[in-house]
Image (cartoon, rainbow, N blue to C red; front, side, top):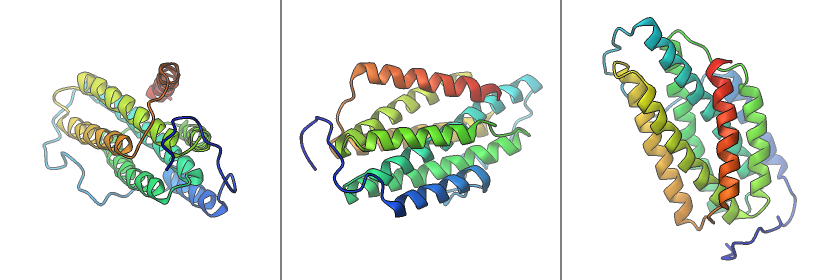
Length: 221
């Protein structure tokens, strides 16, 4: 892997057809099939406290946002993997994507327990995130990893905010968010360890603004 922090042109085919087909399959399963987790759902042994109606609404909206975030994460990782040149980088992205699939299952389950629904905009989030993942992947593997690290740092901060807003009585939702936060931090550390570049501050700001748009819409739609 090149040690240069400058964007690199992708050598060979821009998009591997097999990886594109895999991404399409993943997208269909993400959007239309129940997500599966190999790990137990965090907090499933905790009592599901009697939440007041307003507390249930707050929890449902926040978990819907988190579910949409996991849909976006699947799109991002699939887009990045479609153009990543280094097999080791693809393997790292694949491991992260598997954990994000577990997060998808946990938030989906919690939404059902709260008698709520997924965001109607999830297909938009997946498609847009896939395109963004491809765009960064084409800059080269170190930029690919840099985008992964910055995304996960911002998600970790976002989940901190949700822990402040979730009702204390909703122990199950809080346990899920806590574990998701720990996993996201691990993804960022792994990307940095593999040589991720530090993205320009302006790009990080743009990513936060895009995230606010997504979370604001998913909160209600």
